[in-house]
Length: 389
Image (cartoon, rainbow, N blue to C red; front, side, top):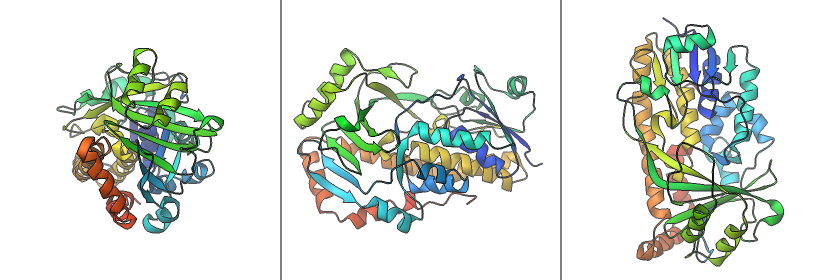
């Protein structure tokens, strides 16, 4: 029996992408979101070609291309000496090698573009200010006044939809936090100024910086060990937390300390990851994105994997008459790719946060390896064509 109606829990990147993906096949979608309004939250985001290809299929990419920046290069540099270790020519290579662009923008810009597309689609209805403590068909129907064939949990790392799936993954704090802040263009230190994505590698931490064209400033995220502030995406780094941030970078080049001392009201986000577990209940409920497989951000693929999930889920449901079979095939198809992306993130964390002799060996290896070898290592990730394209 074909699926005619889907309820999606969560109006983030995963949920909005899912709604647009199902609408491509004529499926009506109700998106349920606990927030009263979709405000500007989050920070900078890298949209790699595998995700840009999906956004193109959903007719959202042209809107983003008018606002984002396509970085000239992606550079890895020493956090101590500031020396550039490797530089990948991203702007000129992404479209020719992987068939889609690589862009950087604020997460709110992406969400706003997806939201406009959803609001303009007659098959999509958004329900704001509807907090759910549990998820099942009757609870959802009480909000939407509609019975749905499928419920999609796209409600993030603290998902309540996850509990509707027996033996689903458990999300735990990783022991790392991400300090995020934006620096105005006029205040950006000279060593950051460029049209590139810069990743600085240092002892037990790393820092990523890139310009946000639509915000007239630079996005900066610094990732290192820290304490869990609880279920929040916007804890303010004041007092002890700000001191902890400065201590994490005390062995880095003094330029970083000078910059970090001057930032006002930085926020820090706890980084959670989800373990192994089932993504669906075998009949009418499935979880995607961070709800299913939250991972560390060391490969900058969290949003991209969520978009892939959403797009491919719609394709699998469309192609299979049995919903149970579609969900099983979808999970079996996605798991190997998610695990490969997770392992890449873990490898990057080991390399990025190396110290002592390992750090020296890493810097030498990065310096002597040709850029083509690094680009070839990304073909499986950035060149991926999702089911349904």
